Each structure stands twice: as C-alpha cells, then as structure tokens.
Image (cartoon, rainbow, N blue to C red):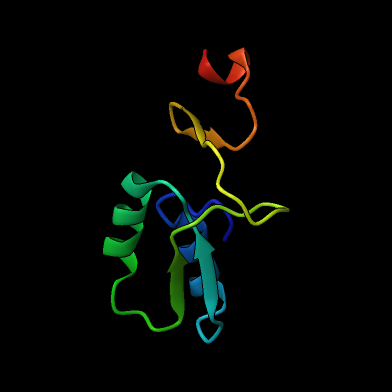
Length: 79
C-alpha cells in the first residue's frame, strides 16, 4: 500500500486476503500514528515510515489538505 495514509486500503486488502503479508508505506507522521493505532498487533501488516520513489534520496513532501506528493501540488488540488 504505497501512500498508505491511515490504512484503509491496507484494511481492505487484509479483509480480502487475510493470509497475505502487506507492506504499507507512509512518510507523513500524522498518518503513521493513525495507521499504527489501527493495525497494531497484526504480524501480517508492516508499516514502512518512508515514501516511495524511483531514487534513493531525501525529498520534500508537498502537502495540501489530505493530498501529498513529492511532485508540486497544483492549484486544483488545494481549492
């Protein structure tokens, strides 16, 4: 689950495939804490507290409302 946010897709995937191991990625601390509180104690779900991209480097995360991206967020996202 790339861009796991609070973990809704992770929950859906786990419900459909309960025996699957699920790796979720979320770089934003405010969503990491919510995700962790909802999935604590489930050994099949692993949260990686990083973003995913084509290069191994540090990058600025752009955030607007409930959207986030390593790319610049356009005006249509913020309005």
